[in-house]
Length: 130
Image (cartoon, rainbow, N blue to C red; front, side, top):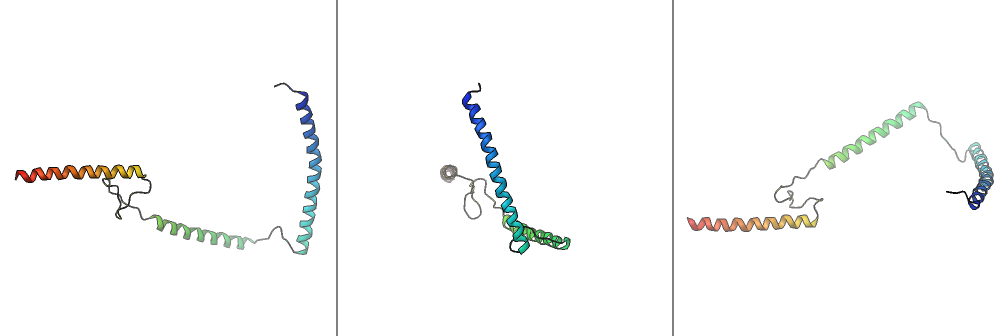
């Protein structure tokens, strides 16, 4: 694209603003740093804490133990896997899987109804022949 006078002017003005705001930002950062130093000297607000190697090792061990117990709890909850009948798609409690939508459930129900009707008719014919 061509460089218009307007875009050149806008770029120039943005550059001026950046310089002005940089000075302002630097002043505020200096004030914040001074306040932090004063607070640290008085003991009001500490920016950091000193931790020894032993304390750090204890913290790591506690975190690891906590993580292992959480994993064990989660594993116990997920160990129970529902087994579904392939034909009816129901589990031992008579419920359909969570991932099955209503349309798929109705389809399975209708196929089961059709299967029952056919079996009933065949049994009737078989009984009559005897």
